[in-house]
Length: 625
Image (tube, one colour):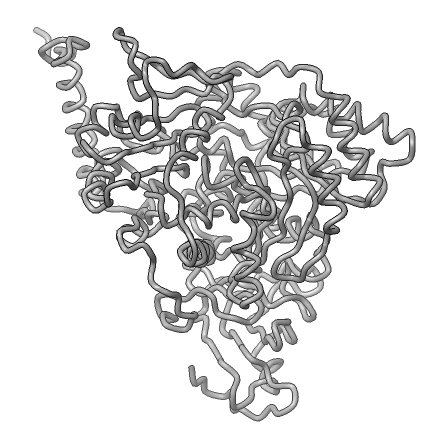
């Protein structure tokens, strides 16, 4: 973009990319604000104004005018299942951002019509019934009507899944199928499965059923992953810490990102963890991995960060707030072996722990090992989630040199948490301000993709406002953070959790050239509109990896989405929603759609004898005689 006054004259020190005329929040206390930035060989060389960068503009320098928009350091999701998500992205119909169930079902119906025989329509995470105007799940009957012959699997949080008739058959569920441990197959009066699966409290029944669906092969896995990374770049993400997870085997399921990294085709920096998959075999797996690799092996694009988020299966609690807190059996003996093995060999780790009851038992093991000098020992370790962690446990974590990573799971499960534990407990779930006041490093993430959405601005909205996607205020002001702190949790803290705080997380000379130019000014936009922010220009290491609006066409071309029937090819990923300033006419239209859908649902229930044949007559004293 030609810019008056910036005449190319640099020779030896010419930048590859210059972005100017921006309102830059650098995250650098030495120079917190700037207007222009120059990047060469993937690294920031200058942060300043037009005068500062003028001598770095050469004949080949790409100069981009930010048009006065807000620029921030590239976001870093500290807990994202990015590797698994990439392998499945193009197969999934995303309800992320969809505001009515009516719209979601219309998308599902259309997708079922184009899905070939043998494939499934799957809605897997990123949404909650509370975000819909109708405030409910789809029914089995609605899925059967939308897709009579195509298997449909709809996952709702950690709580349940709804399957149509074709999916029950494809998954092999019959009247003789036993309930799996920790799960429940809902059955009708005739003993046949109805199509509802319940986590009670373990979500294994949900995920093991999903695992029966067809998967991608060959080049399609690479294409799917590249499109998923581009979708993350769309929201300004430039880094993520992969928390591994169930059904993510090492090294098999990591081969796609490894091949993309070798080809220079990653558009997101990934630090990954290793998660033992087989109960009873965890120590053997960890021992083998320790002999194969060491944390920080790799480079700034793809690097090993340690073990977790499970070390042993028996020590993991469940995060299904629709069910009572699980009572864990004795797990300390094997758990201690795993932690000792990691600490003695210089491996860091992260631990999934939802409840303080679990955290206290973990800490007792750590303190036993601390008496032998293994804590703190310089290994990076942290707790994930920690919705009910206590003040005493936070003090113990700080004393042992630990850190925290919180996610906006209550954006999607806040209502369920309040119903079970009450608003008082929800106010401190998790106690973010208490963590920060103790000087703990607190990274922020989404825990996408199977429950929360991968859109980080929904998480930032939750950090700042304490509101769920259903607009319920869960966390009061005393447990919220200001916008700068929330952004730092998504930038600086994430870098610290991977030992890269000296290389990224801020915009300063010598740091990696990772940035995002935003659609709205994060620092001044009304609070409800934080969740609607997207990136217009995302840069990773000086490469423009996402560009839209005035910058469309500046990013790298991707191969077309494959297979061609993919939901992503037709609907894209996250469904952009209007800002709060939508017109009254549009609001009325959406409410009208929700009312119509509600009446259809009532009629369906009436036909089956589950509701009166006629709608209730409401008494209004204003119209009484």
